[in-house]
Image 1 (tube, helix red, strand yellow):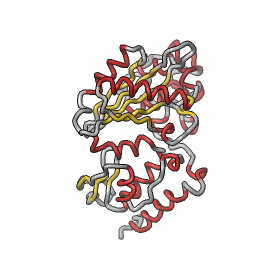
Image 2 (cartoon, rainbow, N blue to C red):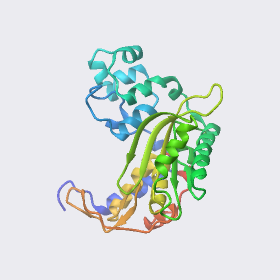
Image 3 (cartoon, helix red, strand yellow):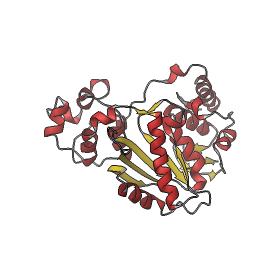
Image 4 (cartoon, rainbow, N blue to C red):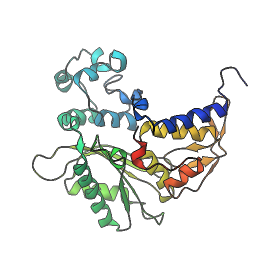
Length: 302
């Protein structure tokens, strides 16, 4: 075995231990992951393309003036290097992308967590509009809402159709319907991904006085990808990471699209052969194929 390589059995043991420990002591795994996508303001303010992940982080993650000018570990961001020191500096002087401008416009609203009751109303609004277009559509709120939390940072709504066909073409029609109702107030990103998944990031507001602007993601997926997408968008991020790590030790690959077997990787662990997609009609099938006991969404919150 090359020096520095970790035996597969040891990797599997570590992944299993991590997946097991969450149910014994959730506090062990609550430190946030720090990535480029979780540092709003990182890099130049203009001139860079904004990825889906960066846009989502900017508009969904509560932030303060200090976090905008100083990134992880106190490193200066593009805003800081351009001389901005306060939120008002950024708001009045910075050259902002459209997504950044929306984030600042609704800054106070985005700071407030969404009560579970309000998240339910948002899910019901999306479901009603979707099923008015096609009564057979399935609509599920994922994320921390599905994990049973009392509040949410945003609302992620996953849509599909059991016939495997009728989800096609629903994406733009649903967004148009929600805009016409005045429910969607700002559009951030609409992106079609490999595997026919389509994801919308935007801002919504329920009708009535005193209602706040809320971050909303709508994801339309083929029914064949629904179970893996449901698992992925339910989270948590740490739980997903451990599931993917375990799959890798078994020569498999897990994503929001599919669970695949007989995946070929090179000596660096990079995937060079996609393998074959395994049938996963439900989340329970994903757990079973990975050799894990099924965990309810509330047991994945770590």
